[in-house]
View 1 (cartoon, rainbow, N blue to C red):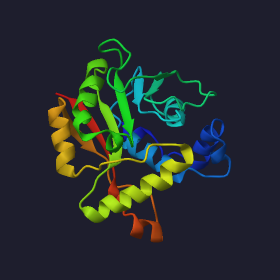
View 2: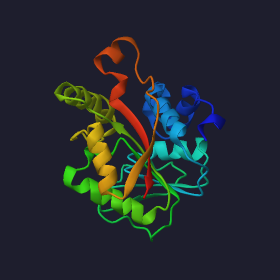
View 3: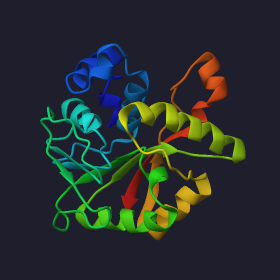
View 4: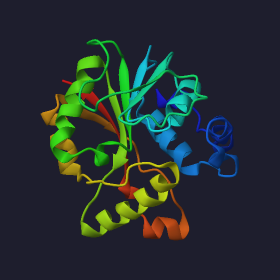
Length: 220
């Protein structure tokens, strides 16, 4: 599917995001464009509808609705920080039970969410997503290899989340832990995106791009 989609122009994405968040009027969303390109690389097919879980301000769900092969996008989150100007439907939920009937969505996304979920609640979250979603779960997150990576990722989260009121607490997963989470939740990791260039030069030295991971989970 990715062969039919050209890379996202960060300036085009800036136009979309800046309609809803003033910060993007002067900030080109290089990281967000790279993240969306990485998701498009593992995208399986056109989907009738998509649920973005942990949508935050909702601007990424809005961008996916405008730029991805999907007919409808909805976003849910624990806290209602959604921009009021969004055209995509948004809902607040209790973090345990998604407010939807079984098998109502064709796909779902978790964008930089799982590492903020308590470790003991992660399998339950993915099983709940599997209840309402019939197809793939696309996950963009982080992957650690050791203690130094934990420190790097904590700093990245602070840089990326504090300006938007996002969550800071996090516990990051290793590759083996991602595999275990998938297996324990009724999924398999069907595809991983190739490493993307989120940062360059000194930024890539301080925060290696291998810390970013994008996967497609398929139900088994």
